[in-house]
Image (cartoon, rainbow, N blue to C red; front, side, top):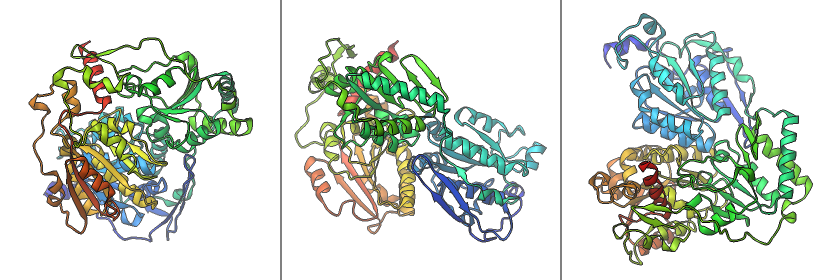
Length: 633
């Protein structure tokens, strides 16, 4: 540590002062109320203690990050606040890990240092913002006195200005707090944490190095935190629910279509109840995969426009009423904007508003709308009894046909896709190769109820569309933001969260070799914290999606050759804490999945699985065709 760092760390903390608090959390799914039982000898607590205990009340029992000179004093207070520190290999990975943790527990947090640290994590924060994941980014900043003096400090731009990095974060956070005034600091913490929870997006807290030890009123921690969405206006909600029910009861071919908004706002329980009481058929869009119990009789599959199974597409697009929950009509989610559902036949339920046909009703929180629908349907009889059972007639309207390098690609006929491609884009595979067409349906029978499943941006996220999930599986995939390398650190964060929940959930990761090379060092964090993650590393020599979009043989889509099966050894794995495998054929895969020892012990399992270089799920090929057309405009 250099002299400048010593000067601006300021007062030492009392690492073990006071008694450890007892924090209890009452979790009631989407509607939760956190209470803190604080036993302190004095009413005042250090600001850092207050911050970490408040986070614990929101369920954040572990905080990810990287230590730096401006945040070290604050980190001294983690232990006495009852919060675990999970140090990551870099700040970007810490942001990804906090995101994965949040998707399992409901909120995550990371700590970085000013400037160099926070900017390294910025990509992860942007991803959390895009995908509505509540993450609290705590930035250790220079002391207030140093900032006021305009000193030319390290980690700055050398201009004596200290606001620019916070300003950079304004577009990717829903709230910021600069804790420079001890008189308002506790109130500011409460304000932004409430915003983070309710808006389901990141917030930014700047904590100067001289502030963690200053005292605030600890009695505020005894005040209950309402984590239930604010009630809707009763008349407005009643009118909307009445209209929705009227439309449902007159429709002949209604269905429910669920997407990522339901996942982002933690509405799985409500969606599940609605599907069961309504008895309506239900489909999901790609970002909604995992929200709906796929073992229900009415589940029909994944709808993604031209990326759908033909039968699923036919069923959805012939509906005369679609009850759409949390739809996000992105390019990938709709396979190049190819969804074909008329707005006049749609009731669009979003987090903060409802649209019926073309009429929009603002300030209606989705949680309460769903609860009201469930209540009404529970008392008003089954809708399904009033609907036509004559099926969905054949759709004679021609869907737009995409082209790939001048050749028509007709996704309506899944078995004919490969033959419709130019010769250089197709090949014949042996019966023993592990292809995407074989693997993703097969792995579904190996998965278990309540697994936490992560699929990397790439072939894995598309392949899993055809995997039938057991009940209760949590699906984590960054479909919208799509930052490659995200899921390995996210799996580490998810595993920490799963351990805290103590529900014996397995964490299973599917990731390609190109993505792994970006963030693979977090395997060491998994080993360090004894996290039982099962990793399937897809080894197919590079960036497969990019190959299909452009440059199948181009060198820029290649990645260096790594010995993946032995990689864990280079970062601390031993026979006691890790089992590694290398498989290259279906026989190897079947033997592994049938092995009763595989995945049974609380350890890391690392599987290097070879797949053909040019092979890809159908969705990748359709996306490539759409991307070529969009990029050419």
